[in-house]
Length: 423
Ligand code: ATP
Ligand code: MG
Image (cartoon, rainbow, N blue to C red; front, side, top):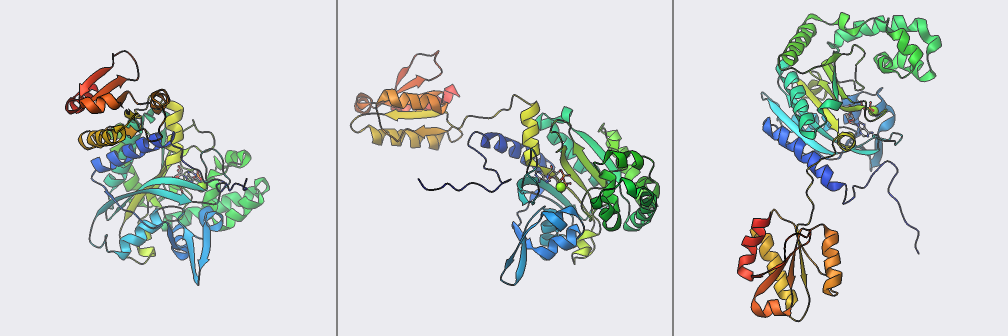
């Protein structure tokens, strides 16, 4: 036998038994986004590398070590590691945001070269939202409220909690950075080489270090919230008041800064303790400077992205009764001279008149016994049976595969009504 070729590590297949759950989760996401009036956009999976370097920031983990980048002749391209950069690029390119508000969403695969583990993959999927042209905290609140509604629909609302912070303006953050660096320089003995490097390149990222000794020291570090500019402070206060008014609970986490450079003011994460180390299911924030940074007319922006693998895992973990429909409802079997034609016609008629049902036609021959075994295996609840005598009498036998009801012989023209009455 020839040697088999396997999938790339960290890039998963979605099996026929898993896809119904995925479809259900995706359908809930779409339904919620549609109910808030958001529009779908679809961007390419590959973009020019400098887009990500400029949008996300050279010294972030994503750009410095997680991107899949390659040369296409003399152009450097990257498999998108996230959706915001491409969405902003598209919005500028097509003028979607010029003097305009836009509430957009997208869903699809993202790629990051990370160490694969539960909830962390090299190809993973995000659903993301980006809103352009609205500077008010009302829209920050809407995004959070929208995600809270989605968690309810998915049945995971009791298992996620909201972390909230404001990282202020660029200037406020620069002031804070100096204060933080001055504080941390006294504790370099506790730092790994990587953390020492971060101290120079991206000191705010040290705030979410997993190094417990350093975390303990950080409790006494200067707080970003104390360095906020007045505008950011007011924005944050209004956001908190809006969330309070609709009963959304949150924890203000002064160490939450998020990994990507482009955020300002609001940052938030929905986290869970049910998935081990990969506890963040959704993260987002405001990025008022990004559109201009990527060459557009200045326009405020705010958005978030959720990891679909982590949501699917969480749904599996906590919500055992998912309304996932079996793919096959009706299985059509036939045996004997001239029966294939009638079976095809019948199956097509069922599909035309009852398109919400899954109708599978047995195509691989064999006797009725073998065919019924397949019918049972398909999970269908009804079998439609056509033998030679049924063809002659223009009839169909309807058999209930889950038992209970006697099988019936019906005239062909009555079959559709009968099937309809059974679902
Ligand atoms: P993490 O801290 O877990 O690495 P992140 O801050 O890098 O997450 P974001 O860039 O904010 O993640 O992406 C938004 C969401 O996408 C995350 O909250 C997570 O649910 C999901 N996500 C990110 N990276 C991966 C990955 N490698 N595999 C699966 N899901 C991911
Ligand atoms: Mg990451």
